[in-house]
Image 1 (cartoon, helix red, strand yellow):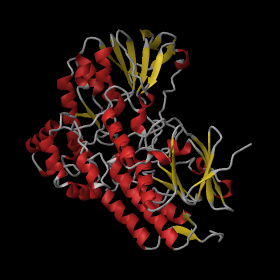
Image 2 (image 1 turned 90 degrees about the vertical axis):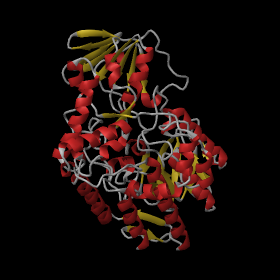
Image 3 (image 1 turned 90 degrees about the horizontal axis):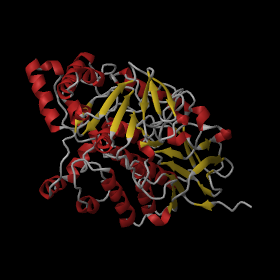
Image 4 (image 1 turned 180 degrees about the horizontal axis):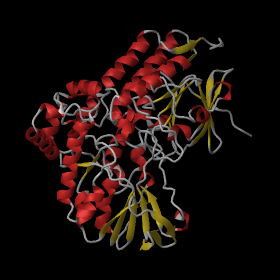
Length: 537
């Protein structure tokens, strides 16, 4: 016999940065909240991603909450770019410091979420048969949280261990003395490969697409440097809310200066390291000729670093402008290919024929492997949401609605699904900015909205179809003003076979986006349908 559903004011799915911040804010409003997560602890993507070399590519002092001044002053980061264990400790500290764990339901995987139209509430059912009900549901499921395994013939026949970087064993993996293969040279692969090379007896990297990567020049953070940054934290946070991440943005175009001056600027930023490199000039994301100058600078660096000319050429990206795929930040990635036990297999030149029990066959050659690491990415932005069977008005399936690509209003709601909010979803800046900046903005907008609904005795809010259509067109237009659509990236869903090619993030600066969201709220949630209890929407 099924037990009665536990009832709450708001249900939140996901106990990462977004879910914990939503819980803390909603609790402060006096709402009864439960946060559901399949993991055994808090952390979201930082709970699962424990692969060697895993670390954030946003500087530590920026990659943190801003909602509590005492928290940001007391926490001390050890490195310029924090590694996964330190970020997880930070999230765990937040959960403990604000007593959030008592409202968590961990080891709880949500299977379905159904909107009950008569009662105007969401009913969530878990894989183990429990049910939770609330008028409002917030998807804090993360943009990069559903790992994607490669679809290669025979991979099921491989007898060795297979690990995905996004689902790494918590006890770690010892590759000492093993012949290890890696598929994927995106961000996680580029971070993991130098570390795997330190363990493996032989490391074979199967590269599907060459990627641009910038040195991190990671280092320890001293107390004096941290205190200087924290002394003006409020100013830093205010600027981040306008630009997303605190980079040094140029006010000049690439051709506003001489070639010599352009090269000096590239060199200066390369030596500083990090993603800031891509902002060397203000037209690199919109002008292909300008982008060619910085892309060639990086290719020249790869050729200078990698001793084997043929390997260097395979590592040089030529099929997309720099920055149109997620720019990677590395520590010794290209240098790794100079090691005698590391081999690069360029799959564009010699595709994999098939996997066999003890290795892989490539162009007729058998490459023996003891273990395989899949750094093959995620079903980004929509995967975690669509992994749940979500049903809105009239039993409308979200999977069916988004079959041709995600459709949202402001990236926050989707028509036909009342009181269902999405944090950093498709149609918002999401992965194009510091994720925590985007998360904090969305949590504030959503909680302000819930407060407004309560004050006005409004029971449901949902996106209207015309407003949603206009927003989708607006997001597409913003992307098309840039070079971003020129790459077959996971921004477009190109890494998932059969996934519709739709550019999912909103490419405008987050300051512009924030003002657009605020204007909607200031006009009584223009573009949304609001109704009182029992009234037709």
